[in-house]
Image (cartoon, rainbow, N blue to C red; front, side, top):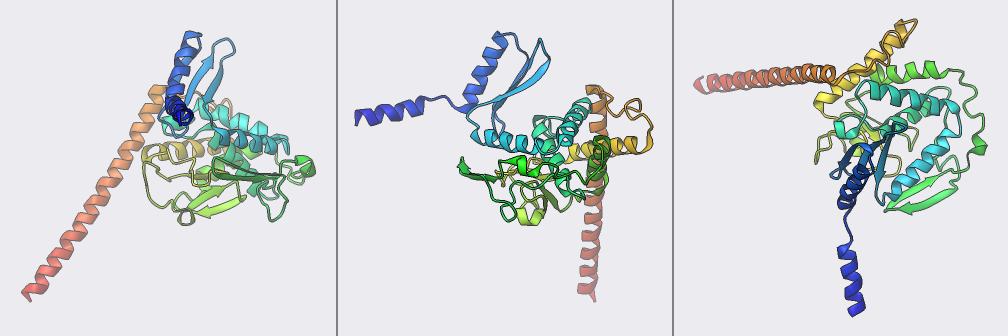
Length: 313
């Protein structure tokens, strides 16, 4: 009994993920890492920092075993076609320049952008990437449960050598396709992208029709393993307009400019410029809300007047 009590006490005394993240932040600052930002209240608590000598941005999380499996799956996709890695690097750089990187800022994480790119390459015609989780078409070589979530996919990618060879689009052309899709074609009202299926689902199928528990579901990106997790859930009503505007801006530059870089595709947006744009979109959202309330009030007043006339007659 004493042994059991000791074991229980040891479990109870173990620090939480949030506590470990805060402790790591203190250690990193002590070791002269720069821009150390602990985010203990995130769904997956992390600490972000920059290694000062190389300038490399790093994230550290604790006991996130599912992330290990996610990383393995993404690496398998990157082995199939080199355009995936090239496209991801460009989009990560673009998102950093334009201030739309980071779920903790109310935009999208690097992980979400990778899922968006893979989905594009799965659904473009002809397809450049297969769906490694499609166990109807392929026999999975990885089949395990991690933190209660099923992880099944093809882990041997040699069989997919040359899979996307019939699609001759260059990385630059695919970059345009990415921005054009998210700027002009994606159905934000009802669609969910699913890398797991290599297809689309509806918000209704996922139960993501309304805002619940802080999850906004305005741009819906299904996590490939933790399928109840919408990677776009942190994007709010103010930032969704800003994000879509950036997608459209980039698509327009790539479509109309002979030199997209000189035309500002990767122009760095200052915090002041970003705040100004965010305020403009926030004012636009507020104005739409006021108009909608005014229309609703007018409609209600007319119904009351009609009801009163009916009673008098």
